[in-house]
Image (tube, rainbow, N blue to C red; front, side, top):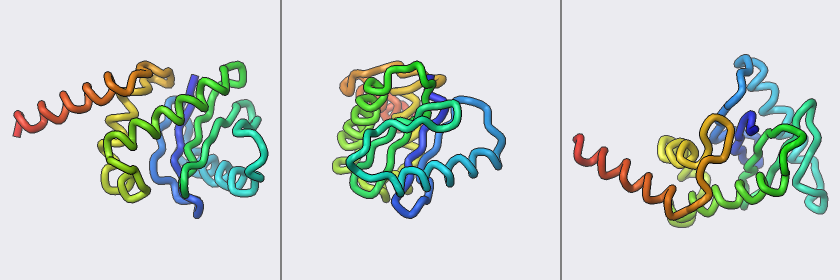
Length: 146
């Protein structure tokens, strides 16, 4: 199960966070800060998996952004690493060449894409075509309702 997803820049600013397990607000901020410190100090030659408290962090860095999933330690880390890559491909397909500003100014669309891809901490859809089709259908519905 995915407990939370963080998208952070190199400076430690959290751009997107989605929490699937209950954490207090203060604990969320501490986790974000602590995870950033761990990731930024980690050499690039090390693996993309970190044992962190009672969880496993699976992360990948794209340009200046860290995409981090916090998962159960018994889950398959490689599948989550591929899920991060798939999510980035979905973002690229939707925004063109996705950048940090797309995440900041189009955060509602990022959350919509994320909700079509992951639901309740479990990966629901692995087809880019289906996720994009659902998002296009939502956009059409929004246009009709205006």
